[in-house]
Structures are given as C-alpha cells and as structure tokens.
Length: 89
Picture 1 (spheres, one colour):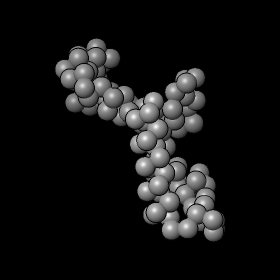
Picture 2 (cartoon, one colour; picture 1 turned 90 degrees about the horizontal axis):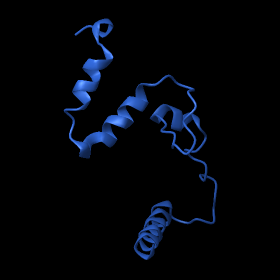
Picture 3 (cartoon, one colour; picture 1 turned 45 degrees about the vertical axis):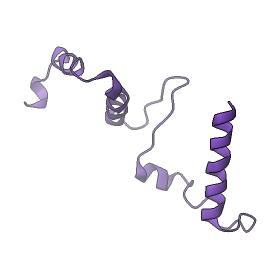
C-alpha cells in the first residue's frame, strides 16, 4: 500500500487489532516517527535514538572519575539499590 493512499481510518482500524498489552510498543514506535525537535507534551519522557544519546554527552560522562572504582561493580550496586527501593516503595 503506497503511503499516499493510507487514510487515517485505515490506521485506526489496524490499531484496533493490536492487543492492549502491546499498546506501549505501538506508542513508542509512533513517537519514534515524529519529527525531530518536536517538544514532548508536559510530563512525557523523551526517548532518544542511539545516535542522539551518543551526541548528548551522557555517554562517557563519568569516564574520568576515580572515586567510582570498577564500573561494572558500581553499576551492579546501583541496580541492587534500585531493586531495594522498589520493594520498599
């Protein structure tokens, strides 16, 4: 089906066939198709592509820190702390 011939109603009909437990995936995909630079609605999380994440400055942010020790061990401790907080919440 050519993109020019797709009607909004056709898209809605197809969406109604998607099981509710997969709606999150559909929403994530739809958001990934939206134009770059579009401001998210208030309270909505912004998803970054891998390329955007690499350019964001977050990757390697702590590369020069000496107080963290082994990065794998540090990440493991953070995950454990997060799990404990989830159980206590």
